[in-house]
Image (cartoon, rainbow, N blue to C red; front, side, top):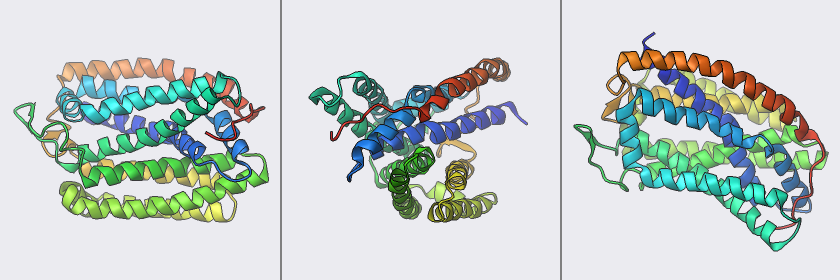
Length: 342
């Protein structure tokens, strides 16, 4: 295996982990905003308990992607960071506001106005940030970022202010909300709360299916190379079939109340969607001008980076295991009361 392929695979694995962990946390914020009914207080309390206290650690996977892109594929990093610096900056601002608001809401006096304001900021940022992240992905895949002789020529707004990136942004939001709702059916202990999030998971799953079709339809004009990859690449059809099977299994498991199976199937669905995107976009890092091999750094740099990844994994994975083992087990413990309304 060529070194740049291996590093690209590590980046893809990190993106999958970020979607499965960090994406679900974003989705939890969506359901915090949409909490309703006689149990909205309990819904928010459950979301707060499940998200904290380890949720910020999930951003390590996105940081890893950024560092690898900067080090291993500098032309791709330059093109993305220049052409998409506006949505990237807004996304980072949203992440910062979301984290700060969650902390202030969790430790402020219960029920006062400031706590409610921070709760609203947390929820709103949880909606905006995933949409921006999806728009960034859609812009990268759309072919609207043009690079000539290492210089971005497509401007700062045209690549991401179009229909295809926007639909992909909505798709990412719905996907994260679906994933969070499925996870929350496993975390809830009260049957009524389980039913609340089961209904939300089924509803958001339908929205995911609709937006997946809308994204594909928008790709005919908005991302023709990706559309060709989705239909013509030999590996994408098996991925389409397995993605459909995973989605069907998730719906079946939710309908029959097999929530552990639903969690596994939903995670598999998200993973396969991301792998399908990667397969349809290969060999491009930025469609259509920056390829994986063409953007690769010096081979000595890549080999050194592989060694650094090996050493880093020895430190990272045991640390994350201890973090989840110590603090993750406390998620099922007593929850502090949530607020009645934002």
